[in-house]
Image 1 (cartoon, rainbow, N blue to C red):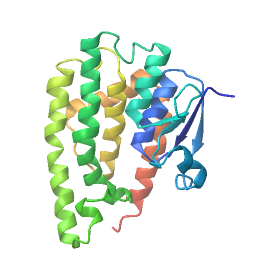
Image 2: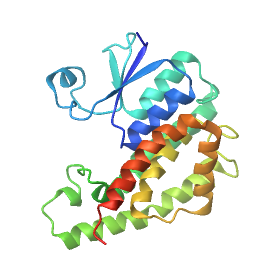
Image 3: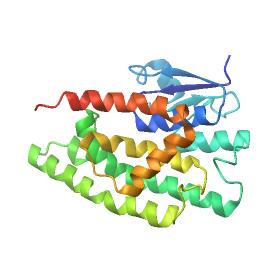
Image 4: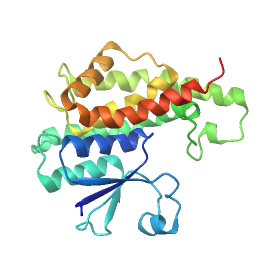
Length: 231
């Protein structure tokens, strides 16, 4: 039996992050497609937050952990994967900061901008999940799309600072999280800056099939959703 069992949803970039990482790290794992299972009694008994990605591992205090960044940090620490997660505290702090900035600032904008086109439910409290009229929801979506430019520029100028990756000359777990996040912007035909396009190409070139296979599932879902739009 595999030491790691990953419960995941293929269309999700949050899930894509861990799917890429496990392949790139060459760790032994199995995948379970959690579509339609996350609200089941068995799943909720282990994961009351009903979130994916989630991994099972025998050494975890509760047997499972969810949240993509936490999963990658745990596995890097457990398996001494310092090429993905710097051992030096100062360099590791930059990777951590970049990941927190993704999930705290960039990804909420991405979700507000793309979830309506992806057919995903928005989070409670968001305009898109409220009783607001269609015009208000569209206005909020456009505002989020416009707001993306600033955090993207922060990644380019601050975290990368002339380097190909946040991790330096090799991708870090923060780079995997960023590249996966940017995949969703294709559903709204967002015009990525040249550096971001180059970054995503470099990530796929560096990681090869480890990136391309999970990305293919996300891209396939995006292509399907775009094909459903009225012309």
